[in-house]
Image 1 (tube, helix red, strand yellow):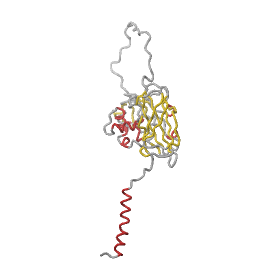
Image 2: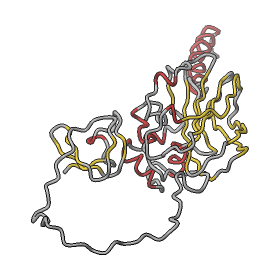
Image 3: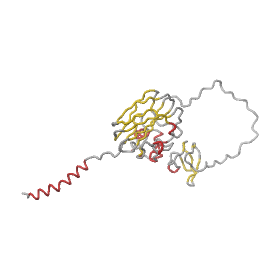
Image 4: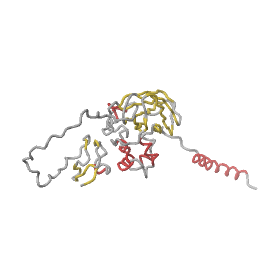
Length: 294
């Protein structure tokens, strides 16, 4: 039979072990909020749903080629911890979809073929998917201006306010109704989720939508074009050899490049694979989807 002292020693020894098991078994509480738009789905959510390792759309394939697969595993973290209501001051034009973070730079690709939800002017119910909702938050929604060109960098000046919902207490899936204005063609709905209490963190989403029709319709000609009769042959003979294409100078952020343009960077010549406007982080060695070394 064990002595009283032995029983006490065993009981004391068991306390830390039980506490350790309880600490391990208890899940850690999220340190910050996380989420994105699920309807209309944000670009990062679209590529996450397609599968980061084997995306289906050309846009998601290009985004993975530019920035890798990890951003789409971390799909609910397109955020800035230092926002504090200063989104326009801390996020540069051309980097709104990535929140100015190089990790998510694939979301800023200027393409007219991002998967888009078909919409029409009038009421639209949107859904925000928060994997870690936080109380007392502000949600601001915007739409691109009439005539916005999806092949150009998205600027703050391109956004028109749709609605603001202040001091919200979101759940896992929170819905609001937006009133969409008259638009044609491809547009983009942009959102900012700004936490109010306990953190300066804000989350950002870019959701592509399609109103149908053409953004810049071309009217049909009223009369068929006429072809003038041929004139005398040109007096200047064509060159016997084609001119040598020279590189288009040194790669520079903020420059718009067309497919086939050539630049130099780090002493190497690169050829542009798809038209875009260059931003920091898309240097030719870092963007194989955009540039190929000559």
